[in-house]
Length: 208
Image: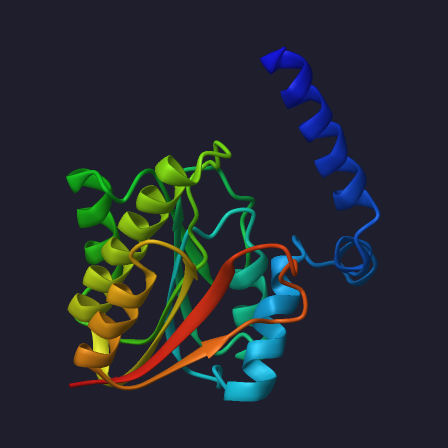
C-alpha cells in the first residue's frame, strides 16, 4: 500500500516537473535548474549582484544559483559553492563537495573563504523531503540555522544573507532571530517558486 502511494506521488511529481514552464525555460536558456529563475527575479528586485563580489553558495548543486551569480557578476567575482551532491564545474566557482555539518567540510569552506569577507551568503538548502512535516520542518529549520551561523561568521558588515525557509513550526522564531542580527529583513516568494510550496526566501541585510 505504501509502495503504491509513493509510486503515485512520484509519477505526479514527474508529471508536474516536466510540464513545468520554468523547467522548460531553464532547458531552453541553458540554466541548470528552475531555481535559477528564482534568483534572477530576486536580483531584479533587490540588486543582489555586482561585478567583483565574493559569494558563498550553500546547497549549490546542481549549480543554478552559482551559474546565475557568475553571469551577473560578469565573470568578475569569487563564488565558493558547497553541497553534499556532486556538481559539474563552472567558471570561477570553487566547489567543495560534502556535508558542511561535518567539521572537515566546514573547515574546507572556511579555508576557501580565507581572509576575505563575503558580500553575499546564499542558501537554497533543503532536506530530502519525506512528506512528514513533523520530520521535514525541523530538518529544514536546522539547515537554515546552520546557514545563519555560517553567514554571521563570514559576512562583511554590510553584506547580505539570502536563505530559503519553509513556513511552519519554527519559522517565526527564525525570522525574529534574523531581525535581531540584521538591520533589515524582507520576505520574497519568487514566481518560479511553486505556489503550493511553503518555501519563502528571507533576505537579510547589514549585520548588527
